[in-house]
Image 1 (tube, rainbow, N blue to C red):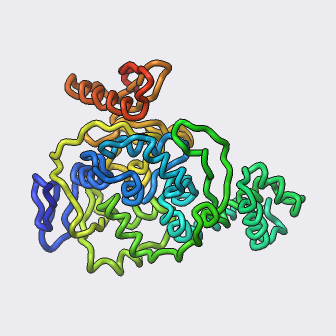
Image 2: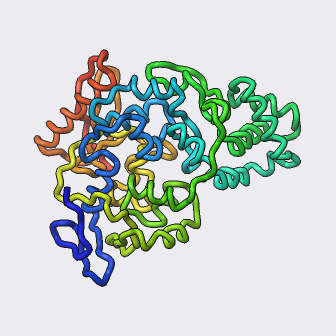
Image 3: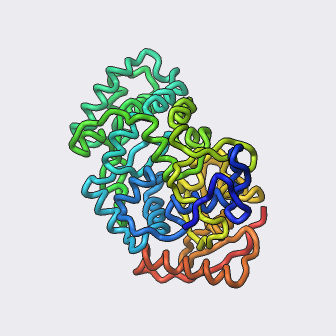
Length: 381
């Protein structure tokens, strides 16, 4: 594995001199990010270690964390992640960007305190519906309710509404979710199982108290290890936080700095992998809301300019296909087929590689179901 140098070269995708921050071109950023996201080659990490390294997996729906690890890990089976969830070694909780993530137990109890100020800010949108509501008392009552037994949001609305009948019931339930670290209890989230969303506190579910929020600098280093090289704005987009510049500046003596093609300053760990931009990147099938596509303010390292916005419609994200490391199309399971919809024609070799990767994904996740591989009409913009 080749790391870029401060002097740079055309081959490494780094341009610059020893006195100016080198520029990392799009392909160099792409390969570095894919390597850290375990997408350049499949990793031998355990599912638990992979969830920790990636600082969680987007889990707006049940299946995406399983698809995310199937694309990244060698020897993965969905039952392995499901067993971790059943054993309460990982859990589903609202954290980064106010979205649901599957985190390790440790990160449930520490990352949530880190982003808690952002969760409190969410309540500003519900202030009219919460007029006259004592949020401290609400948090105490909601904790008693969900720790007595897991509750659905409808049950929380009803129970809290009995104390504040003039408040907006939905706002009351949202306030409980924002003020408390609520996790979704199983069987919700287990592979091949179904269950409604029922909530209790992370401390109650995991059997230990929440820890102190980690030092921001420690999380910066973890973020760079999983998503770098990256800018301050990139990490703020990932975390849903603001005012992180000071933490990066305190770490500056320990970090390398680069520039992206637009001149934005990027930070990186000195010993982090920065592969040659020409390193092959195999096709990968990613789930909707995969953090690879959501964790940078500038997504150009994965999304070519011509395809910006094509993996979204409104608030809904589509399942995405990477070819040569970049967003190249969408995919979806049909009744009897895996349908692949590229944004532009693929070469014969690319089609063969994509089909082989699709077959592998199906064997890993759906070994008992017979699916064909079908290439749909090229999606036009």
